[in-house]
Image (tube, rainbow, N blue to C red; front, side, top):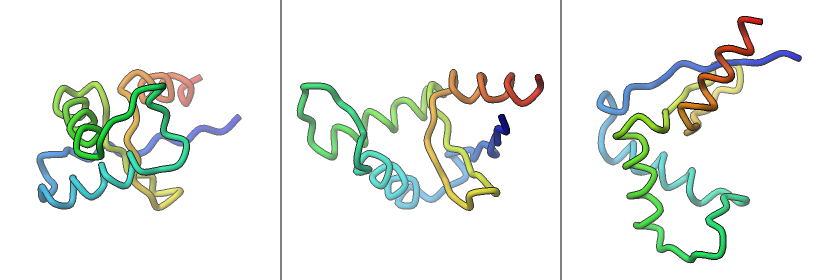
Length: 85
């Protein structure tokens, strides 16, 4: 299996409006699961921003896919290990 690990984008290097737009795009994707709870967009954005600020989630650029994604630090580290095996 081939894995691709993207480049981490430091969130403090981005304009605040750009980061907010990326987070909004992420939380509005179909299939984003919040369980039975219903949250407003602002709450979802604040939660993801908190995860990014605490480094529990990472903003990652994939040159292969020419896209930006937000993934958990744990998932990123698992991908890093998988690519070295």
